[in-house]
Length: 296
Image 1 (tube, one colour):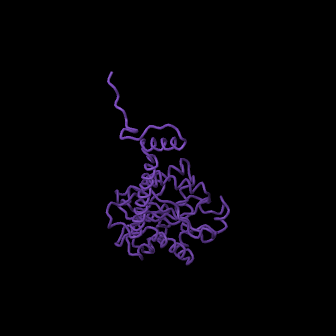
Image 2 (tube, one colour):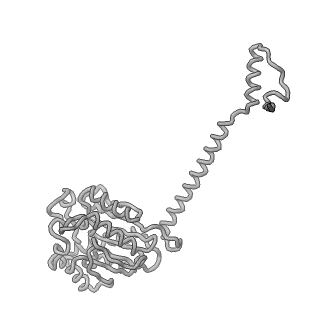
Image 3 (spheres, rainbow, N blue to C red):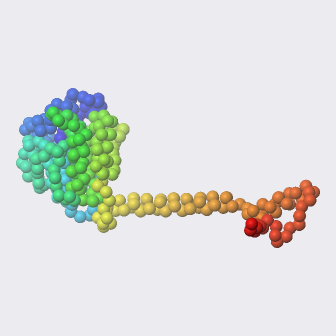
């Protein structure tokens, strides 16, 4: 997938955005796809974004099997291979897949529309990445296309094929705030946790959006990366501190309710009356004692 120009990113719904010119399988024809094998600028941009997506996955210290969504010419797949992991990629453009095959990428390539999704076996992948592909699902390219339904189908299939606790880092170019909300909502409704990560938020040129989501938490502690375990430990410490503080507050409240017993109140009242030179009965062991009720 192509990176929109700076002018296209800054001016809302612009005719120059690739996704407004034609459906992806048509836009990425042989001519457009060939650029991804020859343009050093495109190769550099795609590779850097793929490496950043891999960082956000927080993968465990072992060889992992990853899913590359909208793999295109295989540039992001090559970054996965360089990181020492295996991968399977799919794309809707036959021309892009031809370029990937000609580059002799090491991943397996499949032809598929992300809006329809692929039915992999549950828990197949240790993570997933996507570079500049997610925004295409927000378009109505043909009759019957409903963006939100296509997003729901995509995220439902993705959730099933990810291992429990695995992450997905999906880089995309949102056109409006409504698109961001729709994409995030679809992901969360399908069971994912997580949210949006924005790199260089104050730069119109370098700004990058990553939807970083996770499919639950792994029950195997050894499979969780060190960063996740450290964050979890901090959460536990904070929870324990909250419980301790709340416990102290409850104790203080109980003490406040019982400041003085009934007998102490009676004795205090009698002392006050004596100071006023009023006639008061002498204090005995029966003072302020509760009387037994007489049987009728």
